[in-house]
Length: 89
Image 1: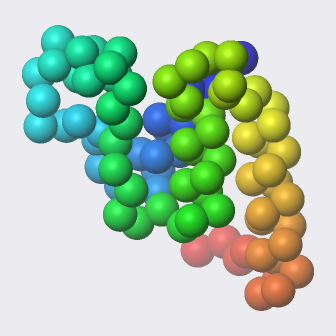
Image 2 (image 1 turned 180 degrees about the horizontal axis):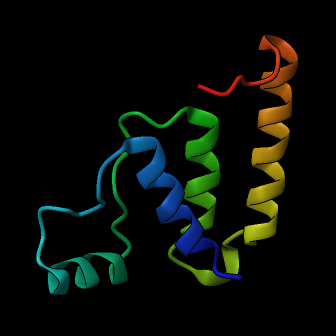
Image 3 (image 1 turned 90 degrees about the horizontal axis):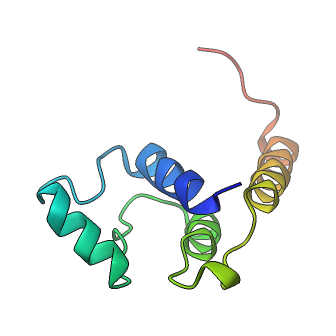
């Protein structure tokens, strides 16, 4: 499983924008291959850490997508314990 794909999707959800949205596709590829990643503005710090580990430049150091899912489940469970379960809108 590609955790880097999941990381970008999570980044988009938290940031509510498109990474490198202002750049042409070829420039985005060049940036990503050189290790540049989108910046965080709205993402909570614990989620930032997971996303950063998921899109590490060296694929060997990336955490697996299942590890990301497990960590987010634990974060949600901890949050639900503190505030009560999420209610539908």
